Image (tube, rainbow, N blue to C red; front, side):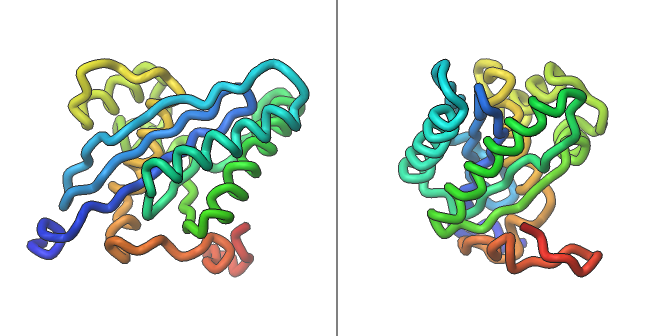
Length: 187
């Protein structure tokens, strides 16, 4: 435990992808304490989907360059009721994955229920509960916007999962090199 307290902070970037709004949250794990660094939203302008995807890539590249995370976590794709919305979400998530890979960073993925469970204690928590708990855990003076709070919750989930401590200060293993328990490669 003393090693964790004296180790340098581990910087984690959480990403909540979306084709219109992509949230990001950056925290430092100082020992076992999460500390807020930054959060916000990459909002895309109206226009063709490919232009919005390029804006997401550029925005995430800027966040990575500015904050220099050593680890990245993202929300796993979920099935939406509207197939068109699900496809656009998948494309925005794909852009985020490519951006992170191009920066040479490893990636961890978490399901929405897992994120809500880790931060609120309830897998079915609503957005307001997530915002409230993120604000409390990180001792923020104001409540972050919903997409930024979700991204901070993703970063906190990674920190709380213990994965952040598997190799302190080093990037996580590239996602394509890890296997699922089913033996299939994770993309």
